[in-house]
Length: 88
Length: 331
Image 1 (cartoon, helix red, strand yellow):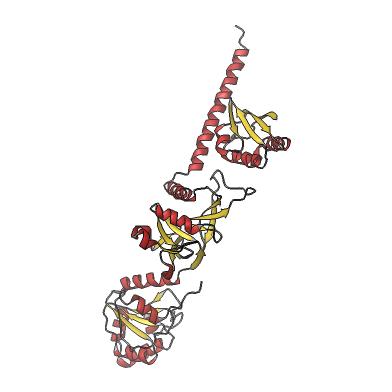
Image 2 (cartoon, helix red, strand yellow):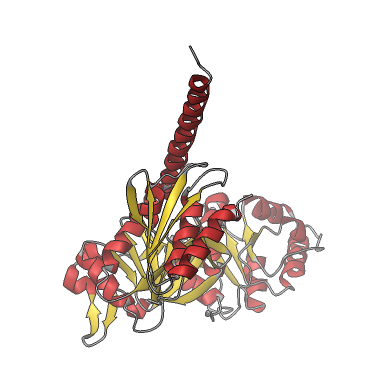
């Protein structure tokens, strides 16, 4: 299992479009992917779950991945967030 | 789509009651073809100006034309009529109960051109006839699919043969919705952006259900279960579920499909066992109704989400400021 904290840095936070991109990326992997913020844990492959985190710009979320392709999954999600969801 | 030619004979047969037509020439010229949906009043042509004369249209003689012809000497009248009727005119309509001059009937009979009389005044007659012709010449296509009126929204189900379009229609009918057409939907473009769908006459209100054969929906479910035609408002494309494929999850990006140059929303629906497509179809219709009434669920949700995040960000900055102040506060 991998746990990793990342900071949301795109302009408007995890609104519908970035959340959708994150869910699409997460769904490509077999691993169980969870996101945690402020004590809430949600399924990283569920759009409504990811949106309900309401992760605002500057906030931190934790990625918790467990499964055969956990390395690749964490790397892919991290990259997406680091690239600010190609927003700007 | 190949459509039958519109001959004068067919026009007469199909509109004689609606337009109150009386045939004034002997039964000849019925095979002439009408190729244009517009009408023409040949006043200037009768007066001798034949440039740009749109002779291929149905010619309407109203009070003005008839009064003009009556004002001429018999010789001049005959000449005017012969000059115009030398062209291959499809047919002539004399409105407002006007009695056409005998020369018109003579020349038209000789040239095998039908002359009809009607009691309607010109404007109203033109309106009715235009309506018929516009419909006859409207762009038309056929789609392999099933059209159902769901809560007043016309849902056109498409997808490969055997995916279950008719079964969904049957299920929807059972729940009180109305079947328009199954298998072959004839779609006509009305005005610029309205698509009307209907069934072929022979297949009217029948469904083909694999294993059962033909089902007469009107006989089984009654008149409330059927509709003759319905505007096509959303295409629901049924596809086999593919775990590799990306399906729309937010509803923010609306897909569109283009039928006869008109864009309508397209919903791609993956089918897998145990999924209740009927309820989803009802929800698609209701969601479309919400959109028509100005409520876009996905956009509304996102707006609320972004507002909440902005609020949290503001609060966070405020907290930082306060902490900063307290940090420097050594009292």
